[in-house]
Image (cartoon, rainbow, N blue to C red; front, side, top):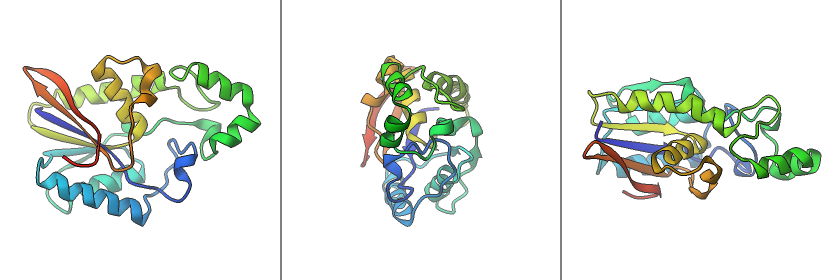
Length: 200
């Protein structure tokens, strides 16, 4: 593989960004689909993927479909690329959690990498799930350009891995809706050439 494009899905709905969406299977809104269509049009001028990977959540799969734009680009679904599972916190706002479970909310702030909400995953758990799938993509010698139509948390843990950044710092990596991150292999080493980009 020569280039990897890590893409976040578009907007889901009003207020979703203020809540722990996690692995809830909510579709993109019409505005979110428009965001991805705009990104796809820009990508076609620069780098057309040989394959697109996505999770089995509808917003990720729909992002992959829009990126493929009815072409013959294969879409490969990998449940391992799902967004982090937030368990009992899923669908709740940060304010609601801070008010209902202040001790847990504070504990998450102290150890963002390892805190696991009831019934959910930690970001360390997410790393253990995502990185084997990432390595599978990297080792694919038949594709030159691969896109992952993914999620903010998934993108962040991959980028932390590539940059050698502590997982505790993952929220220092911005991931706006329908953004693209670019990884290029130079002398057999991955180099992150764009983070949270709107344009290529």
